[in-house]
Image (cartoon, rainbow, N blue to C red; front, side):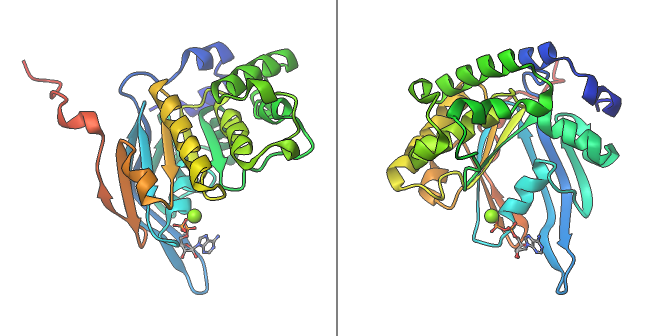
Length: 260
Ligand code: ADP
Ligand code: MG
């Protein structure tokens, strides 16, 4: 477990070279319960356990209201569980203050949402660079990193277009670049294809696959079974419970560690 007092002090260079390496567990949820106080009270997560390791690309599927967004928000430290243990990038969320949790979120987690949430009048470049403001990165460096992130999502020819001038697919690429720009330990995407037609939705999933081959750890909620089926790991949730988890593909073949 990491020392919470270290969160605010993590140097940028350490971020860039990657705090999380190899087989490290990025998100570890154990017996997580989430109740929304009513009335009537709703149990959105019912003893959910899940472990995401560095380098994974996992899909979460399940009917509307099954707890997918709640699960992602708890993984993203946007919300705290009612009970159960949550560890993100090695930090026990329960032991962190709200302020420390914000720092952890800013440094280690990238979010992509169905509604993009871009500043419409700002350029693609500004939207992505803004993703670094809470990291304390200076203006020149923010710009440089934003250009690089936009290149990674295939938008180097749209840097100075305002968000309002971009198509839906392009906007979501900008949002993915914004999620990536701080080199987070994990990218969490909640129905990123929900507002796109089939072709653009496919392109976004292809982009996530491409980034994952570059070692970005991604958890993506999708309504589309077809999209989920092609991803390496499928987690199915129903009534707040994880009812199916295809697991980490490589774990089946991995050798136990302490064999002679
Ligand atoms: P999904 O993303 O799978 O559609 P959610 O996680 O959004 O599911 O919701 C799970 C359950 O929790 C639903 O019954 C929903 O109505 C309820 N819920 C979600 N957010 C809140 C909230 N802020 N307050 C009360 N109930 C909520
Ligand atoms: Mg949802």
